[in-house]
Length: 186
Length: 419
Image (cartoon, one colour):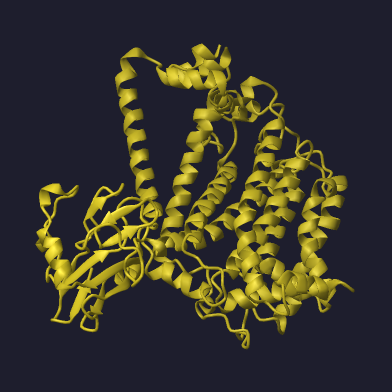
């Protein structure tokens, strides 16, 4: 009725103007969309890590106090990082494993910069639980590395997945040896 | 019907089951709006926009805020320095609060000038005053959250207002505080309520709009639209007109946020709250100053508090104080003079509220306070009886058609002769 007339009259008054009108409408809407996106971005980006959070994103650890066969757990970016001073036996077993048998093939040399010290993010790659095996007496799994109690993933002495639902090996965080005894993680 | 209304098949499918698009269409095209609205009618939309900006930035700020006396100040400083774009979001929130009040004050004085509170829009007006009260409560509690000196002492002074209530006053203040002074429990509940209130406001805004759409907008002439020849559809005419106001509003807000972000704030609020030391000169935010002046004008504690709340209470009964049948001040020569005097009086009260309570300022505050109440309680009822109003035009179209391209030139939309 009267309303739909009003509506139509504002849409396409003269057929020869249709193209120009469409162009103006599309250009206006595009500018509006750009503006809306520009406004939305700061409101979304504020959820990303803040400057003070990023400033705490790397840590330095003195590993000289860790005896052979001992592990320590340090916190890095809110997550546990396992640092293990491995025994000769563990290193030998890790490097003797046939890579072809692994679900996520990776050699032990790649995973440990210095074979004596293995640095891992202590978060199971399945669904994010912290695997057992850091403390003496804890279950270490069938391959004598780590065992995730949540869904039964077994990791070997190089932190590689051998059995269970986890898809990939325990992550090796970026780290460098600042000296023989101090490493910086992150 | 609805099948023809929308070309997009998805819209048509949804609208058949959930007629939201029909409702939008209804508001856009079927809602008749007087065709002579001037730019003063932009401020309702601008108030709504301000509320939206406040809610969005507020939700975002709450993501990085900690409501604890030991962490609140640092949390706000962290937002300013470390959180991505946090400084901008907080400055928008701070300045949009002030802009919200500017817009609402103009909206209120628009209503006063054009008699928008008169029958049949009394409830519309009263709901507006309710929104204003809720806004003041929300703004006050929001100002406490950064936990600076002004936050703390503002909270102390305002909550102490309730101690003026006879007998139960002190118990009420203790209840508000959740302790024996403004402290962590107070901050926690203020944060909770500050988050809640904007949504209550949004609810009352919906009622405000329902009441508005019952009889439609008032207009500068203040007479009812006599038929379709006096109205145009909201869209595209007033959506476009509102866009102009929105652009100007956002431009000014951007200027404030990016160039003068602290102009409307108080430097003392960048000092962490100290319960053992009151700043030498404490003032509320500028939008409370007129009411603060009224509070301080009265030498009696209870009297001051009553008068301050009375200054708002009088707005609730305004539709029954001004009984003149003529709405718009354009046709009320005496009322128009008194309107401008009231506006000046309000500005003077605001100025005095920011001055120390001593000497000439107290005397002037008393005169200005007296004038405020005189205006509403004596002058308006008398004007309703004794004022001789100018003759009203017969319709909204008539004055425009009579003086084509005269002083009402800018309102070009009204110049087209009705079909």
